[in-house]
Figure 1 (cartoon, rainbow, N blue to C red):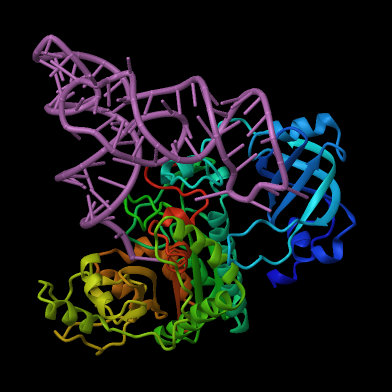
Figure 2: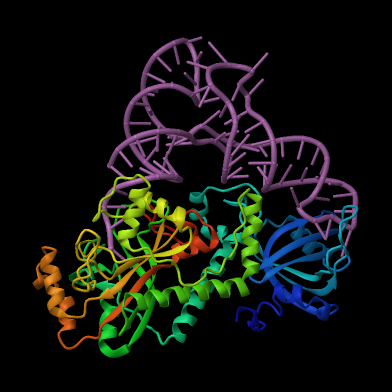
Length: 469
RNA sequence: GCCCGCGUGGUGUAGUGGUCUAUCAUGAAGCGUUGUCGAUGCUUCGACCCGGGUUCAAAUCCCGGCGCGGGCGCCA
């Protein structure tokens, strides 16, 4: 997969720095052209050492008076950090570094002895944030300068991992017969109730940004696509201000025909298991980079512990009981809030499902099995959440496929079915029982990378006060 | 929107009425040494969020604003 990437030469370089790092012994003596960001330069006078970095690795370039022109040498010695450069030179084995008494010599490494040095684009000074500096940087400064923040090794590793998580998730769903779709993000009316939408003008028609692909993935399943998934943006105009909420986020959604809530919970835990297993097998290098940074900040290292299957299931009634037994005031029908999740997470710190919520707490489109009652005799639903620790990752459930029941659900929630024909009309011509879920990608990444703020795992987060960059 | 805390060089910080002409780290500029590799030695540069007030004296106390962080609320 990622390891098998073929790096073809480009107009600007013959080799990546990663190739020289890994195949140095074969390349010694051959001429290469390389490109990168200048991380550091050392030396004045007759010589200059330069560390350069590209998207694949890092290497030292050696410039000396008798192999490059005086102009090139001077430019190299005075170049600002993070400038981009191009170097023509010969691969050579580095002289081994001095090591402290008793320490082992590191394995041989390689450098490029420059014959030609070109500055592609010079960086202004000072940098708004130091790419290799050890001082910590506030999140706001980082996000304002994300283009530089992203050059930091551990930040780059996090977004590399993000790409892998999506790749492995896709891979897994495809093996289970799911097909990738895209649904519209400009919609005429709410695709489900509840949350506030961002209004917009669609030419002369008032419209909204989609808060969920819910309706569209259901319609696709109704249309006979059987099993579908979508990885796409969702927009919520909620004025929340927390470590786990954003107003634009990427939702990983599935929907499958002839499935109930238990079936799609199984899909989800198999998918997460696959993602974690693949990361553990293929991407430890990225985890190591993150841990190197965490160590420098005094944080505990993260480990990729592949969760065992099945994930625990704690039905709503049992969750309420657990919270009550901890001495906290809560009654059946109350929402399970963050502080309650802390109590549950103390016993179930990893992934766990919370199935069988009261029907009254779930949206009208969630299915219920008549007669399936909770401990106080009220109707349960086939909706569920997936939590990791205290944080909600997923909301899902079996959907109601009977249009008469859908309309009754609306009336039970004091809503007028005639306002929801855009939704219910899709169910009038035969509908398979079906179920699905939506997973917050950034929240999953928080778990994997040990991030304490969802903004860390989103390239350019959109929150209540940030619309740029 | 509520409660609590914070706002000091480019970055991250120390400093809670007066030797603050503001600490340290990182950085930037210059010079020197050097097959260096967390380069190094010397020299230099750079800051108290904004507005008002108290006081002989404010980075420090008070009020307002703006911004940030944490907790909560809101939230499929």
